[in-house]
Image (cartoon, rainbow, N blue to C red; front, side, top):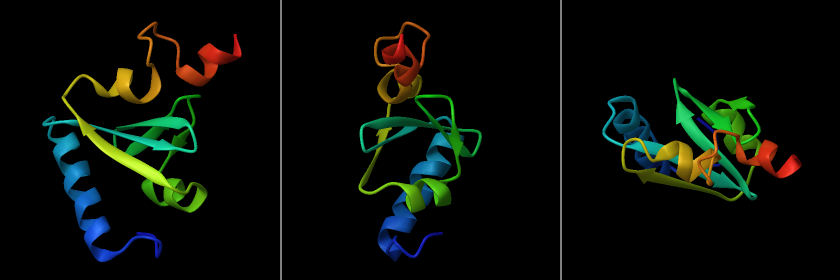
Length: 93
């Protein structure tokens, strides 16, 4: 993982990622106003682009990671109005 993460931060992110993969929560992130949803080992940005954790950390600062209840990640991270259109694309219309 990135040098920008300390050991404690890295451990917390790994824990959140494992819990999300187990279905115990959804993992979302916010970076510079863009929303992300962790799915299948990658972060889906609210415009459809996919990022590994490493790439996300290298490209954005600061980043807020949040565990949300299972099933709430899409709305919380990338489709806030739940209309089925990703937020960045929704705002472009």
